[in-house]
Amino acid sequence: MDLLAHRHLRAGHDYLLLGKSSLDGGVRSAHRLGHLHLAMIVRNRRGFVLLEIMLGVMVFALGVLALGRSLSNCVVAESARQETERARLALANRMAEVEADEISTEKKPERRT
Image (cartoon, rainbow, N blue to C red; front, side):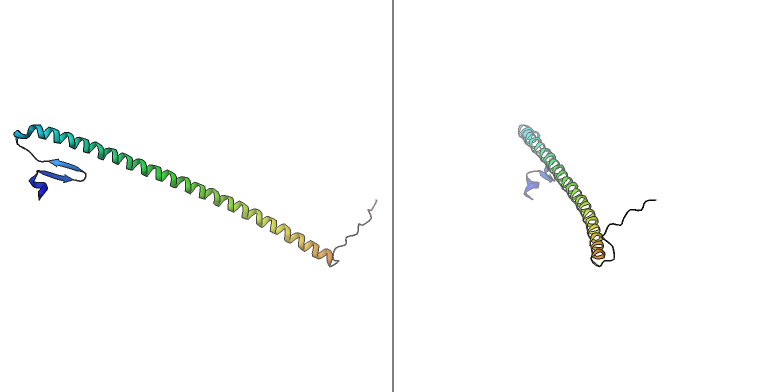
């Protein structure tokens, strides 16, 4: 109720002035300049908040890109590991065949025709 007695209504961060008598014209213009300054501060603050949000989104996007790159590297490393494991198993099987004398290790004489 105190705000109504001083003839101010608050709307968000801005103040709305109600009509005043012509006797306080000088006070009114000074008061309006104060509200203009307050409106500029609010506008600057909104711009700063927008800049903060844009910077935050940019940092988040860079993090997501880095995470995607590391995931891609993990997939490539896993593929290389699986290929190496297959080669190791193939060589282990071949060595087991040699040890079991299933495969001859002696050189065969070359046939001449």
